[in-house]
Length: 252
Image (cartoon, rainbow, N blue to C red; front, side, top):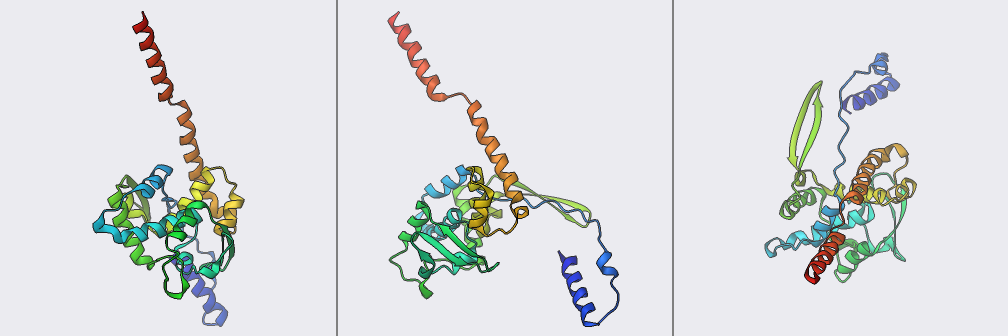
């Protein structure tokens, strides 16, 4: 990334006539780089967040959770939820121009997203904003507290390279969760439900299939784990069979 910035500056300088050397264009070092891990909430973790009763002494975290869940239900970036106003809401849909990519998006709101909007509909926030969104830095800090309270702390191994030196680091999951995790959770959940990537891209504003590839790979893994549940014994049927056997023995 840093070499990319440097190349951009050198290219700009060349066009301005500050130097006449273009060898930098052909310099492509072989750097080791591990694929960035997609951190998202599983179905069980998402339900855990939804149902968690926040202690009274931490009640300030409730709006933080609501805003985070809203991103899980809509796929919006933090910056777009931060700027969301009542004028962006039309007939159960959000119509916005995104802050980062200047894309025009139309996102249909599901019942869970609408319920969060209704929860704060009687409160008047500055600049006609819909939700009580804090700054990205404060949100990330509070999300770490919230998810630690909830107990989403499974160990996650992160690998990166410093030059050619491999560095492995194991951290609890709550430390790796931020505002963007909600958007990733929305994408992975949608793909795991079998919603076509082209439809998901219309909601999220992704312009090419390549950007969706990491999420599709994750969704495939999730779908595979769900499919394995069909191989698990049916506890209900086992209990029914056990009761029938007991009744037969009593009759005898």
